[in-house]
Image (cartoon, rainbow over all chains, first blue to last red; front, side):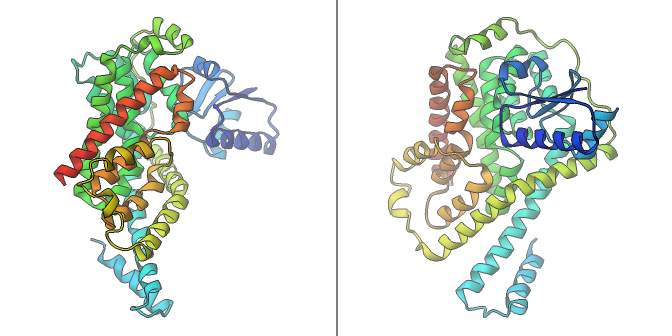
Length: 77
Length: 325
């Protein structure tokens, strides 16, 4: 699975990345996590608020930091 | 409405802490407890209520609405109004800007949204209610919305598209009106409520430290700065007070929660409300960090025109406030 955290580097973006890594580690999910920082690359996903989360090229959340429970649902469903 | 809270504050300070009611510290502590709890309650109500609106009216829907409908000039007002219900994180200003522009929304309308969004939002409204009461809040909200509307209309007349960054111009050339209808997330209210509740709590948690420090600083200034201290520098007769405080405020950055408690004390100590609000709008609405973010999509020239226009509008509304109030 490929997980992308879209964010220019604001505190919320860093927090989202931290939480994503924690959920992935805690549940031993096999995933590649990358952070997309360049605004031009972020805009490819046509989102209007950051941080956003992309799982296998599908935007699953934007403009907020989902709870660990929600994240786990994104990664397992 | 908040009598019961005053009783609790009295009970805590006088009976639990056993302090003397004539004591200055007791008075300050009482003021601090009463004020923080009252403001927090009002803030939570507003944040939660706006959260519900926002859940049904997310930014994508706003964009589609502005992009698809012919609004005959009212689009500036609409964009500005939408700005008030959309929570604003300055780090999102660039994606937001691109999203609007790529939907074929005129630059001026986009600016109207960008100006109002940080100025009038759930946190600012909640705090204003808690600190200044209903009438001042209403005036603030109306003037914030008008400020965004007018700034947007003025900026549109300047034909600024050529001063966008090259990659944004390219997006602009390929811009198309949204055709697809916005597909709302199909969630019932019961499922949305916990998310809205958690978001509201998170927002309150985020502003709490600023708020408490602000109220504490306010309380200290309350006790130690003499009444009318600022009057000699910032009275209504001093014509330069409004522009100077606005221009000083523009490079500074703080969110509404940090600056409002301080503004409250300034007003209590004799600064005219218009001057204080102009200062606040300068701090919250425009800032150097925001300019740095916008640099990714605009040339310095466009940023200067944008900031200049909004600054002038803030100064004018500062004068207007001082005349009306």
